[in-house]
Length: 467
Image (cartoon, rainbow, N blue to C red; front, side, top):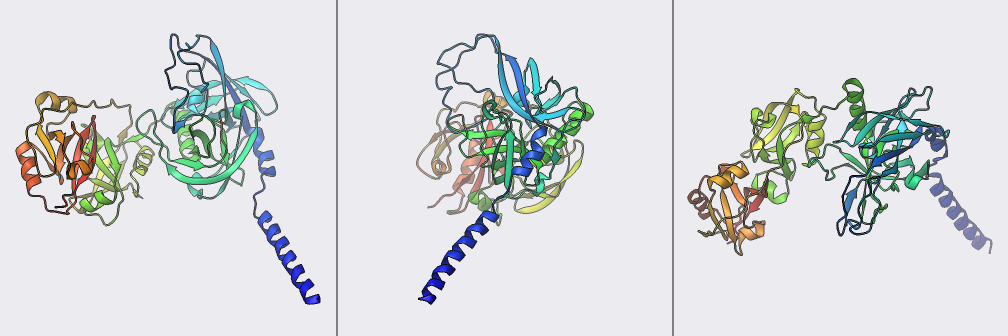
């Protein structure tokens, strides 16, 4: 009997200890919030809505959209926007005792008036010192002294799985606190500029409209990110939020304070991801790097000797495992610096020294229509020569135009009518005859990389004839 009672007590004791142990591992946020909250501010702006603009059917329901969570209010279909000032809100945080405040650019962009509400209920009108659309950051200034400030951490040392805390004003509820973990680092998100120069921190911290521009803290109470975007189907939080690393933010702040603008490195290429098939076709031992699909005329890349079909494996000493990493690294490189770029070309590795340019907004290329069918070939496509008008529009004098696609290797690779095939196994194509000769000589079950221009954008595909 005593033995049975002892066993039961032992089970109860172990259960209690396991529960206590589990609770002991949970993070404590109280002291962090008390220390950090005074430096977090609420930002209210007044904007004049554009005249004579109407919403379009479907505007109120955008599926799977990376939305910047600020000022997105639903409207009835075909309801005009009134040209009256409309208030909207976001968050920010104080970075210096004399009144410098960091927030998102989209919070204050085109604002007529910016009002900052401090934690002690004081309100101050802010001036915009400078902004950077590429990173979605803005620096404000209010007239005040001896203000509470945040401490900055090192976002480069942040680990996936680490606890983080957000403080902001979701839906106008000031100094709301939410917590979660880092889900991933170095995320690239589609942006309005067509390129992304921010390696976002992905978290599962609950973020909603009004949190925009607020700080993301580590458990030491130091800022390691600025909350910027969410992934949503409904307009509200769905488990994915994205923050700008503080390493990016402080570089932007430094440049704005010193010269009023932000310079960012520019290489001048379009790139794509290297998948397993492309890796095989380019004779790589693994799928890694950034595959160059286009080199812009007069760009640092062209002057430095980079070519379409090169695969960048390392840039300025930093390994490029994913193509999405390259814009981040290039953007952080000083303008006019000489960067060592390690590439694979024709199966061999080589290093080029390239002088980095300054990023500017570049015009998009326009696509070209297809042409009438003339010839057929072994991979199941019909192609015609590139005429002068089409060549001028595409900005290329090489290649053949796909006019029809039948069942076969071309269709399996994803070719469609209107595509311009510019290279075959790294060899530029000058005519239909040259292309047909290449196709007729292809060996079965060998992966061949081809460069295709579609809708003005180049990309690489892999052709493999299985006969």
